[in-house]
Length: 347
Image (cartoon, rainbow, N blue to C red; front, side, top):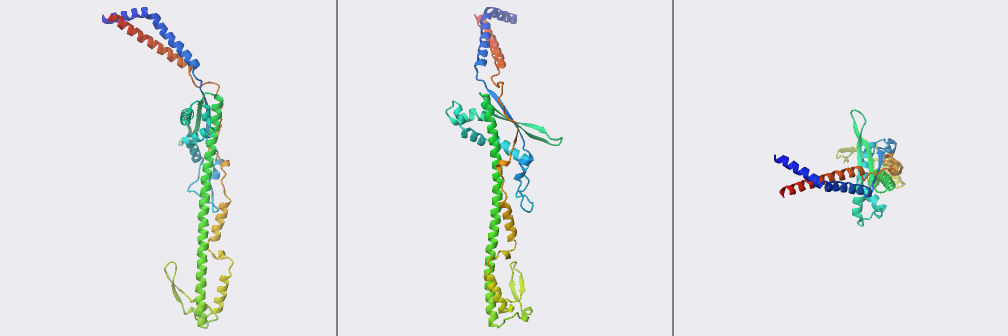
């Protein structure tokens, strides 16, 4: 019985307040239409990026003259593409593009940091689609980058320029890292060559001292020619490997041979021909000197389709705004009728 009274009371209130309820719904409808027509238009431009071809990546794999890679493993297309995807999403690249091109001048926000955050960083959207390479392999390779702006032409222009900049910077970073590796390897080889030359110089000086001492002994013993007793007299010395080695004393060679060898060593223009492994090192250095990776020839990503100025707006969604506005008006009218029915019942 009480429910019948409440329902009757609500129906009576609806009849009495119907005009007010209609005004609320119509007002909400009109306001939503006005807002949808006056709200700032936004346009979304998208660019589609795919992995680069192998020919733009292979030059990062540098081989020495032995045919061995300078790095531990081969640099593959997916390795390079992964670096690009990370860089494109990085604030470092985004800030570089925003401030270098003074994009903050296009916005009313006076604080440049806030302008970057609100008008550029948050307007960039990244979507990686999963492409099926085979039943066993499922690889995410297809990247869609979108940018939202009030001007469709500017949205497409900035997006194309940003992706191009990120692509070039990534390629340059990769090339620079390989060139630095080449330079470091070359520096190590130069150091090895210098060490061998210094060691050879000291070894030659030691040899001269040994020969001069042997010459003095040979003169005192009056040994001018090679002695036939050389095979019966041996000196025991400690080799580099700390092993005892028996050798014929140098003075048994004879003073004539000793003087000739001393003069020959002292008159050497270069000792490099007598340094084991030096020419091999010099060959490797020369080979590395001729190698340089040009970042302009590398691509860390390829553009499948450039961004174009969209003709259709991304926002506002006018139909959705009007629908939601009208629904909200109906809800307000219903609440108004409930409250009015409750008050009239109390009275």
